[in-house]
Structure formats: structure tokens, C-alpha cells
Amino acid sequence: MSKSVRVIEVKGRRIGGDRLQICVPLVAKTEAELLKEASSIAALKPDLVEWRVDFLEVVESIPDVLDILLQLRNRLLEYPIIFTCRTHLEGGYRSIDENIRLQLIKKAIKSGRIDMVDIELISGEKVIQDIIDTARLNHVYVILSNHDFQKTPPINTMVERLKKAQDLGADIAKIAVMPNSMEDVLNLLYATNSMKEQYAHIPIITMAMSGKGLITRIGGGIFGSAVTFGAGKAASAPGQIAKEELETAIEILYKNL
Image (cartoon, rainbow, N blue to C red; front, side, top):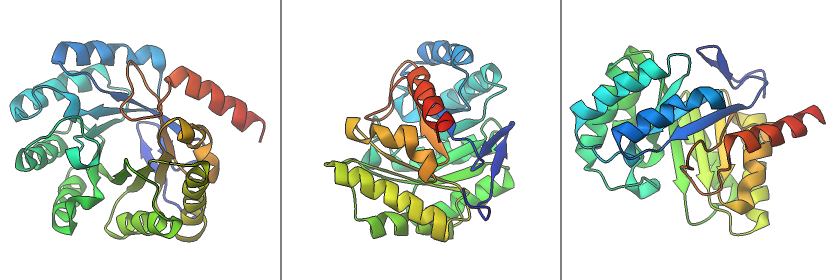
């Protein structure tokens, strides 16, 4: 990536550095399943772990979630944890009361048990600023994300959304889109490269979802994406493949550049 891009360093991982980072999502619905899923992470050896809290059945019970988070942290001491309670409007697994969701996100940030938090760009500037301010005080990095599960916006729109996330104070800007043609896939990669070459001073994460977009999960790093997502026990979004397969494909690609 461009030398002007800030590298985010967490537990020895360099997000925005020379190597594409692989993140594995945890998507279990119960505490027992989640902790079992977390215990299997050691065998996968990802760079990052994302807890998709919106999959959890007791997600609206903040004390329960924080207790589970402590157990998760203790099992994953070596791994940076991204805390993501995705809004239903942008692909969240279940509909969650918005006030509870935002309270949960802030309490997770203050808990000292997470390294990064993902909040959606559609949340609005007031909410985003509140989350960023809370994160800064607690040494948590903020990913500002945008998801379109229906289509791929025009190139300039994708670039503008990444720029907006950056301008609002994100540590990492993320966009995920649904391609309806291979031209859409090329447009996502073009937007990624344009952002990296012309505007980015923070790491960016980009991907096209579904089978059509798989190439962006494997080769997105060449165009400027800093992180890709590979499934552990289950995928958290359309088009994710198993972490081992993803890693193999990335290794083949990079050693032949």
C-alpha cells in the first residue's frame, strides 16, 4: 500500500502493511457453541478474529454478552478481536433494538476486552463521533463500514464512501458490495486501487460478495485492501470460503507476483 497509509499494529499484526491479513469470523448463536468455535481458532491460526455478536441469541442481554466476551478474550489472548454487532439494515443476522445495540457497543469498547470495533457509516455522524470518542479513550481502533447486499454502486460512490469514513475519523474504512456482473467486480477493484493511490491515509478493506466476488477476497490486497475474511466453522457473509483454502490461494498468488 501507499507509504502515506498509516499502519495499524495490534498484537503483532500489521493492518495496512505489506501482507494481506486474514480475519476469521465467529458466528455461533449460543455461548457454548461460541466458546467451542473460539477454541478451534488455534488450529486455523488467522491474523484477526471478528466476533459477529449479532448472531448471538442473547445479544440484547448486555451483562451476558460482556461475560461471554471476557471468556472469549481469555481464550484468544494472542489474537486481535474485532467486535461487530451488525445492524440488520446492513446484513445483521437478527433485528436488535438500536438503543441496546449502541449501548452494547460502547460497553464492549470500555470493557478492555476488544481491540477493534466495527460501526456502520449509515449510523450518522453524531453516533459515529460518540463511538470514535469512546474508542479513543479506551485505545480501541474503529472500523467504519458500509455494506450493499443488493448491488455494486458506481466507482465514484464507493470511493466517496471510503473517503467519508476516513474524513469522519475512522482508523480503517471498509466497504462490501454485491456484484451482479463481472464488471461490478472490476469496478470494486478499480475503486479500491483509486482510493489507495489517490486518497487513503488509513488502511481500507474492500470486497465484492458472492461467488462472483471471490477473486476480490483472494487478490484484493494487490489493489489496496488490507484485510480479507475467511470462514472458520461458518461464513458470516456471502462468498466467504474456508480460511485454509483462502490462505493457500493467496500464497499462490503472492509468490508469483
